[in-house]
Amino acid sequence: MPTDHALLAPSAAKRWITCTPSARVESLLPERTSPYAEEGTVAHSTAESLLHFYLDHDMIAVYDDPWAHLQEFHLYDPDLDKLAAECLQKGFDFREILETVHDKYVRFVWEDFVKARSADRDAVLLVEQRVDLSDFVPDSFGSSDAILIFANMLKVYDLKYGRGVRVSAKGNPQMRLYALGALWGPGETYSIDAVAMTIIQPRLNAVSGETLTVQELAQWTAEVLVPAARQAYTGEGDFVPGDHCEFCRAKATCRALAEFTQRVTTAYGDGALSADEIAAVLPKLPVIESWIAGIRGRAQEMLEHGETVPGWKLVEGRSTRRIRNEAEARRILSEAGFQSADYDKTELRGITDLTRLVGGAKVFNTLLGELVEKQPGKPALAPADDPRKDYSPAVSAEASFAEML
Image 1: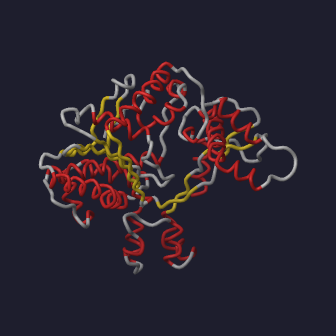
Image 2: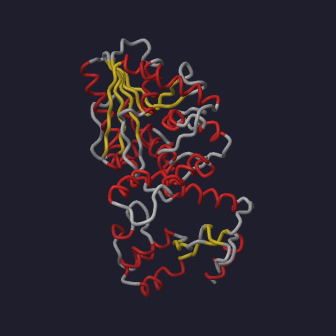
Image 3: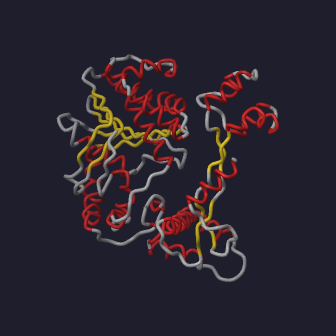
């Protein structure tokens, strides 16, 4: 799956169309990742491999139990072994990812393709198709998870694996950009009358769609997309706070967002807020909460890089425990009479679950105590007068080692 990004990427289109200067400001800041993003990348790569498998084997229907065919999938695409290993290393559940993506995304797309092929034997399904948008958005491109072309219809699909907020396809700029790129890319030689856009969020059991005529998409492109893209590319326009700020890397230093927060929090006089006033504030809270999280994150990032934030410091957060040799733990549990189904699903259960399973902390310590290691806590933001010592990775590691002796 492609990993490069354009300045005006489709995935951030809602933000740079609404807040046109944000793209240039963000481009000056380092890219960030998170466990959620990494898990999503694994899910997309898994979905891509499965769809290619069904395409290359010209299947009529998908398997009912994908896990039972895991070896078959692995032989077809050895990279799945790497994905499984990556999941184990990062604590993701590969079986859950495989089954969820297969049953709620791959099956959906494949059944649409089979129906399309029955109506049009020349139907085409494209997986992880790169689309060029530079005719409408300067230097822009993207990768659509799946594109289906048949008869006079073009469909684009987007997989969103996270458990976060439901995303609607209606009026969604990202989906419209994918549709535009597909229409003027692989769909250019077809007589397309309409484009259908579908967002699938398997872990939320959510599917959202929108269908536009080609004329409606062209009108939106001319009236909304192209003017906004020109401003965004040059960094012109006004900063406009809103729910699109959530994933903006510049939100912590955005003065417009800070002023928006101040206006909301100082708009009321003395006395208790009325029900109407509370109702007016509630829709604005996600934007304010996003700004607060951004400020905390930026302060911690500065301290981690040796910069000074007056009145604040880093301390060690809560430490965690883990079993350092899972194979040995499995052997001990098995010899103690426990069934593998009780302690080992797709990976060894956590320490809390194992403690309950064996009958309490005393038994757990007798059986597995020597295999437990304490990992140092991650850095946490705290006021300068916090009694805890300043965070130091080296000191934390030494303290953790000393506790195990």
